Length: 556
Image (cartoon, rainbow, N blue to C red):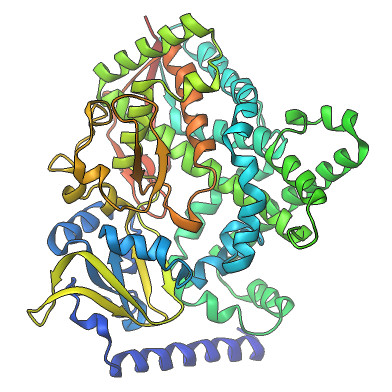
């Protein structure tokens, strides 16, 4: 039985939802003229389809039927937009960035989960944090990370060698990619070791908590984005914590315990870094990463910054779980997907292995930064996999004021008239589709749904090179593509993935060491199915547990 105070809180929340619903039902919305599918659920709308584990068909169906701008139903009758039109994306992510801000449910959830890091801040606070973080993700700093990346990746290589020394073995590759990605961000990002990457090593409490975060949070998506912003305004933090403790909801208690564990580790790391810096060069040299890790560099830069640019301690602390979470799950997913695709295309795996071995013959077992990032086929394989299979399919923004959203390609409204733009009211949730943009046939051509790494080597059509897609622009060092090419996988604009160079370097070094020594093949008795959800995850058909069993053997 809930206490009277808890009952009052729930009644208040219910009244707010009822009032918002009535207002939506009886108020005309400019989005009503935008075509889109109807929803069977007034309570959830299309929200759960967007991040459903089996959402692939929903995304492809609405993209093919309605095009680059369409209306979806949100929770409680709200009108939302699903967008992958290039011009509209440019306005959302670049031109009108501060009008199409992060959704409040996302930032509040990120604040409660990870602290006041990049995920949880908007506006001037976010710009200030990025300004402080940008230098530690520069190419110059990435060069210094290469030895640390090899230290970690070689441990993984050694473990695989032991496992397959007596013959081919079925190995859960996604399990090892997740452990490796966490240790990579641990040593190079935090100057901290989580995992020796040996077969029977005990699991660090942070690792246990981090593995549970995505599955548990996936069960609370609608509540997070529609109820959390309102609930977060009720009472004091102490009151909200008390309510959380007494509400009989297991998933809520699980996420509380996960967050507490991650926060305890973050505090331990930040305090050890401060002590090492105060202890001078000898103390720093004894730290994991020898003081060159991202957090140590950030703390030193913050100490030297003028007062206007300096970040408060709570924002430094917030970067730890933010960076760890962002770097671990997305990178391990991208690595797992790439290894899976290479199993399906053994000819490409053979060519890539030959390219890597030739580079090792010329430059040694540890390739220099400039060599590893510019291997043509390796670069093409990574780009094409991230294009066709982005780890995150859709992101979310919310308008802070009324705004006109223009289209690059006109659509026909429900009234039969051509539309080249639409007025998006304040408070509208907008879903920029990474998947839709990366697979848009109008940009990538009729083979947009095919995995073809050669497209990056043979020359992309003008529809790609001339597009205004606001993704991160990575310079291609491989002729004939000596220009910038966009990809929405790492988003773009002022909230683009700040660590995309870091992630790509991790991927390439791990792949170089694994493909040089091992052949990867699909098991004959298991069907791999990739669940979509908020972050794509490999599973075996009939079992929702994240896993990617591949047959690994020594390569000839």
